[in-house]
Image (cartoon, rainbow, N blue to C red):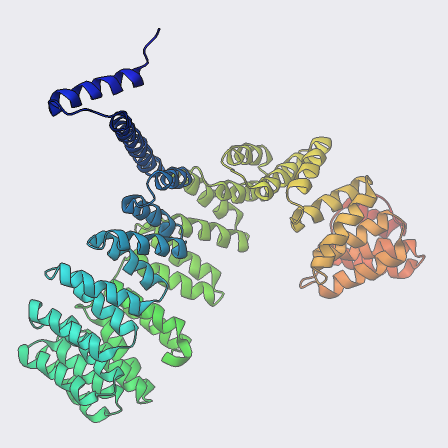
Length: 586
């Protein structure tokens, strides 16, 4: 008969008990109890091993960037050991990272209940309470942390901050005082206490707090500035000005005092003096450019409040240019100002200065290309596009704009090469690919490869159905070819529905209708195109003459053909229309 391990283990245990107990008799019940106890110990060890494995794997999965896998593994850990505060903490940390603060809070509260001495649990829970604006509860936790770690000044500072947010101003002041005992007089602490006294409607104590700073170091200009700002905040302009002037006495080279005085004069409705002080600050060699630029952005963002006119803004930029010559950031600011005013050529020049001064930021290059496009300066767009592609070869927008330039410069084969290269860098952006295909189709069309062009136009419309320029051009080319006129009408109709006042799009729609034989409606839309056109167009006049001819208005048709000739029309077909007094299809 085979003896099982379990029976053998019980027998060995019984023998051991007999040998240890001398002549005592071991009952069967004692043997069974001992066997059960041993089995429980084995099971416990197995569970601990399983727990350790799952916990270690959870940490590994989180480190590898698989938080969901980590959550599942930690949940399994808690099924094995529902009182594992460590697993609760790790799980709570993942929930907090995912902004699930409710789940994180519940886990941490339970973890702290199990292990109240763990400072990490309390610190994370306090941070979550802060995130969820439970400032009172956060302050309580920081109080406990301070008791257990009295030398940790960060806990004490956080406690003061939470009490401030909870609007418990006296308690917050007391916490700052405790911090001050450990650090000595500190301007950050004193300023925080002064602000709390103001909030608690105790201005006399606020003044005393700043006075304490001044007495601590009578040569520090910032403290006088704090006192001046405090006087200004309570409406005492006379004393505020006295302390601002005191700063100037102590540190005549300080540029910052000019900004303080500028704010003082502005609050006292003296915009002229305020701007004069601002200019002095911008001209100071002792103020870093970054600070000047930050102030400049604040002034521009609050133009009305700062009483900043366009003329004054231009003066400030000029001061920056004079005091920081050749700095790319200043040129960028100048460019932005000029472009906001619609001065494209001047703004482009400033952008080029910024780039040549060392700012090769992609956004500047892209903006430069768009300005070239808006100015229709095709040689510049092609030149700048080539340089930008050398610096940022994986940016498809550069190739797209360079492709536009090549088509306008009639470099159709080069455009195709550039567009094909740019398409290699398009990732998950079907509308952008549609624009590339439309431009490539344009180049093929100009090379008289019409069928290949129309295939690309069809693919482009599928990928980029809202590319209105492409839709308009495709519809016009179909009308010229007399092909798929119903499709051309649908596309062109979609465009003018979106842009009902665009003369170019109206001209296309009218011409599609003309090719379909709907002359009356074509006349209406061509008249609208001429009405909304911002410049005289020989093509529109010729098209209108063609429509009038088909409506048997021969004299009017001839007048518009003549008008087209007088405004730049030079085609042989137009000359024949005028000479032969009839419509001739191209």
